[in-house]
Structure formats: structure tokens, C-alpha cells
Image 1 (cartoon, helix red, strand yellow):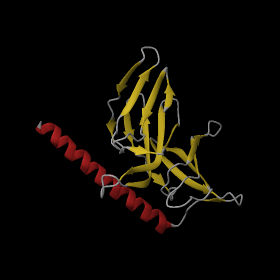
Image 2 (cartoon, rainbow, N blue to C red):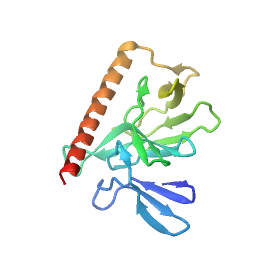
Image 3 (cartoon, rainbow, N blue to C red):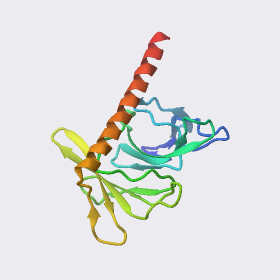
Image 4 (cartoon, rainbow, N blue to C red):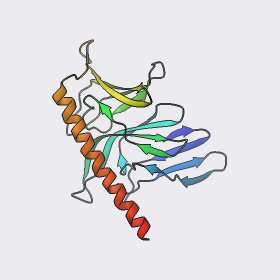
Length: 199
């Protein structure tokens, strides 16, 4: 839940029915009325124990958490997905992340570093099957021409060195998995558009 221009934005959580609600809600403090936001783009699955922080005046960064497993109605899996919600357009995108991303986790802490230029998002701690390491991950937005990309770094708590993954094989494998995941999401969006058009 986050405060935005005299409104509260709510997403995620678990009801008595489980991980069922994928909607983003907006509560107007002035009118005391709730409404469901009409979202476009790459819609995230319902999730719990994730983090949600502002990364600019109008953009929210969503990371990790637990989502429902495809194999079972009651089981959940831990994820390390990233999403950005632009509240000026209500569009959600999944930014491409260079280098290796933090491992899948839930119950972690995250924050936006307002004193850092360019934009920097910080992730630390959390759980997977066991406790995640207490290493700090920073995700920084870089502008290259008209494009923007995010670069991930891991900062070890027991040393002053930043581990910036330069291994080409690791970067290639990470990019390959990201592209495959995007392809699946695009195919899913395409099938949903076909279903809507048939109606």
C-alpha cells in the first residue's frame, strides 16, 4: 500500500480464498471511495510478501514475493520478477535487467535511494526455502540515448567490493531466460486479446 496524490494505492495480499486478487485498487482520501484501476501492459500475477516502492514521483517498482503455482490451487512459488507501474498512464512494464538479478525471495526489505542519481532501488534480505543472504542488491536505471535499462549490482556485507557480473556466459543465460519469459507473457497477452475480440 502506498500514498499517491491524496490517494492510496493497494495491490496484493492474501484473502481467505488465497492468492486470487490481481487487481490494483485506488482509495480517494477526499471522497472516501475505492475503485479498481484499469491497468494496461504486463499484468503481474496475484502475490503476497512482495515489496512495492516509488522509484520516481509517478512510478512504482514491484519486486519478488510469492505467487500461485501453476501445479496446484493452494501451493505458491517464490519469484524474483520486477514490474514498474506508471501511475500517470496506469501501464505496467517489466524492465530488462542487465547482470544477474537477486535470487527469488519474499519478506525482504526494499527502498528507493532519493540521494542517488541516477535512480537506485535497494533490496536486502528475505526468505526462499531458507534465509537469503544479507547481501545488498542495488538496481540502477541508466539512460542510453532514448532507451532506459536497469543494471543490477550485488554489494557484499562482509566486504567493500561490489560484484558486477561481467561474465558473458552468465549475462547471456540471464538474457535468454528473460527473453523466453517475455515471449510467454506476450503470447498470453495475445491470447487474452483474441478472447476479448471474440466476445
